[in-house]
Image (cartoon, rainbow, N blue to C red; front, side, top):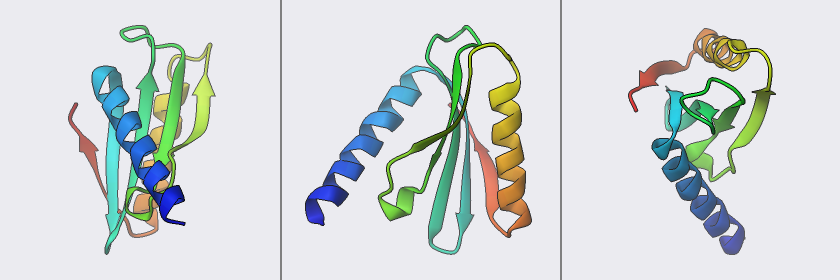
Length: 100
């Protein structure tokens, strides 16, 4: 169990460092002690495509998951991420945009 959690933490740290070096939109949502991160990642920045929407549960040592990706629709990832953030807000989460 300890190894799995350690690997998750290492993966998350590497992922967040990689995102910080690229262009991304990001939101942090909080509910009590829980934290959720929604990130739109552009691997070929400044090109808007391709893009991926990552969802992570940072306080639960969960590996970030890709929920959506796009190769052709420029606004798809941003729209999906914003819809997810709005859904979290409707469920009582406090969400704020992160500045990169």
